Image (cartoon, rainbow, N blue to C red):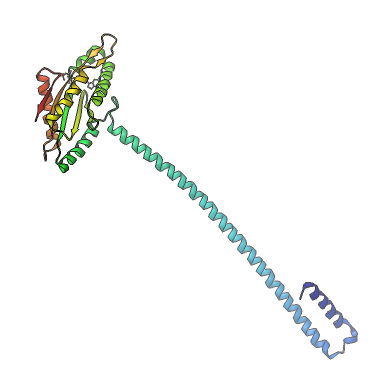
Length: 263
Ligand SMILES: Nc1nc2c(ncn2[C@@H]2O[C@H](COP(=O)(O)OP(=O)(O)OP(=O)(O)O)[C@@H](O)[C@H]2O)c(=O)[nH]1
């Protein structure tokens, strides 16, 4: 029954009940009771409808606010994930830079003593595993104190930079060179023994001797003494280094600008 029918029926029933002509009609009492019951039912339906509407609107609001909160948290999480990604990539770059700084010599730009030690460990392990030889050379610049004394520390530094470049350029692609400390450099030569290392080191010696470092006066010539040896299977790397050092001192005593081999 539509709202309109409902209203018309109510009006009709009320008119019938109010009409004195039907006051004694035996059906009037039953109609009155039925009508009262009908009004009560209508009233209850109305209440239930209003409660249901209110419940629906509360539920809608709650769902909406939950969705909003969820979206907000999602946005915050996305932002945090972006920040974390950026932070991680910064940490990676920083790590790389630190690693680079920790293994590079600040003055000459070639590897430092730490890099040399790392590579020595790796190369001896590899030589041991593959049963291959490994040669090592130590280079000490001759009378370097006189360079500093005559031209000052700055020109001394420039000379070291040029020596580092000359050594790097003269060795083979797969050789490893670095600054061992002060005016000392090391060359690690995988896959060859001391005897085969001689021409390589001789080339390095000639390259250093050919350098002409600019000074306010005459260009400065330099030379270096070399000790060459090879790693013996099973031996500790510090023993190999000691042997190369002793050979280098022998080269100094023999007149400098030369190499000595300790097989
Ligand atoms: N300019 C400069 N000089 C350095 C550096 N590191 C070490 N030296 C200098 O290198 C010189 C090494 O001198 P010595 O060990 O006495 O030996 P040398 O004069 O080279 O003589 P021999 O080794 O006997 O041929 C010292 O004067 C150090 O101050 C550096 O980074 N820059």
